[in-house]
Each structure stands twice: as structure tokens, then as C-alpha cells.
Length: 304
Image (cartoon, rainbow, N blue to C red; front, top):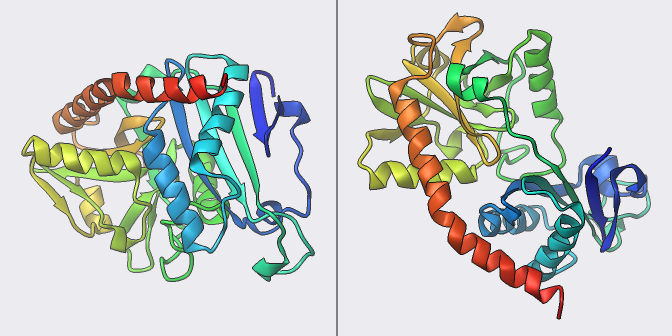
């Protein structure tokens, strides 16, 4: 719990001292929404995108966020200033609050917010240089008609079970199929394949989170006229891919070079994966000046 600062309803504390009621519905039922991003040189990355998605998740389940987005940014800034590291992990959680035990959301009082910040070390370069190994999980993705994957909620048991399968087999992560046998995503990342030079990624209708990295990569593919198809991907098509990679805010683009211990393509990160990764890194760099200026205004507001 060292080098962790947690802001709970405006009170910043170290990780070991952070506490929330056992009657909070986020703890009891996973009745909460959250977002994760990181800082780059002390500046939160794509923060506006993440906060919009946080609001959308809350709206979808009828959860009221107990403070404005401007005030939420200020509370994030307070935690990050206290943490004082260049590269930090940021997790923002909004719960429906505390109340009598029972499923009825009306039993909750005022919602709680929790902001967890901790130092984020660089990921191993071997992930990007050599790729990682994943499995196809036996655990199926929840259908969007039961638990909408575009609600980024604290109810994450489906993904936890799939990830546990991967860890049991010594894999980096697990790919989850839907009830029709089509590819959805990894447990915390979106998924892409390459076949004959064409990029493919599943549509939201397959049952996956609309990832922020995914959204920007779709735009980059259009901008650079890269062949792209957003269509359902079968398990057979997944296994026949020339290249596979995953994307997320903190990991960016990670090549997958083994699937269920079998090599994908040449068994090394492929040319399209490397091209996409470079395009995305350049995109991140292009945003930095603007995002740093916007965050400077948030920090300035703490002093007024």
C-alpha cells in the first residue's frame, strides 16, 4: 500500500488508511461505475473521454454522480499533487452509496466517490518486443441484454473468472466469446486481428466495451486509409489470424503472439501491429501539449 493516495469524498489518505462502509452498495452489489486512466508527466491522459464515459455509465444504471465533473477533476488533482509522481495510475469510482441492505436502489443515500492514485511503473518492454500469450476462456461474456458491457461497472465477476482461467494456464490474459461463439474482447482490453493486411475488430453489438483507445484507433485507421472492417469475428477466424493485438488506455497496443500456446502468424509482432502501435504513440504525443495546458488550469484552480 506504499506510494498510494486515495481521495474518499474529498478526504485524501494513504492506501493503508483508506476505508469505506461495508454497507456501501459498491461493496455489497458492485452497484458502482468507474474509469481508469493514467498520467503522462503528471498530466491525466484523455481525461475528458474517460469522464464522458463515466457519466454515460452512471446514466445507464440511474446512478447520480455526487459532484460536478469540474469538482471531480479538482479532487483528482488533490490526490495527484499529494502523490507527486510523473506517471500515475488513476481509478475513479462512483458508488450508489450506503443504506439498508436490500437490492432496491432507493435504499441508498448519497453516492460516494473514491479516487485511487498510485505510481504506475513502465510495463515490461518484452510485451511489445516479443508479444504476449493469451487463451480463449471457457467463461463466456455476459450478454449485453443482461449486463451491458458499456456500463463500466464494479460488477466485474465475469471478467475476473475469465482472467483466473488465464492465470491458471500461465497466460497473460483471456479472450472472451459471447453466447453465439463470436469474439468480444479480453478481460480489460479491446481486441483486434489482422488477416491478409486487413484490420478487423468486433462491433459493439458482439458485446464489448467501447474502448477509448479503440475509438481513437478507428479514427486513425480512417485518417491513414488503412483497410479496416468492424464485423463479428468467429473463433475460427481468430485462430486463423496473421496478427492479433489488444488495446487499452494504460497498455496502449500490445501484440499477441500466442493463442492457447500456439503461435500466431510468425510468432512475432506483425508489421500491421507495429504500424498501428507507432501511429497511436504519435497520436498520444500530439495531444500532450493541449492536455498539459488544460490540466494546468485545473491545478491553478486549487490555489484560488
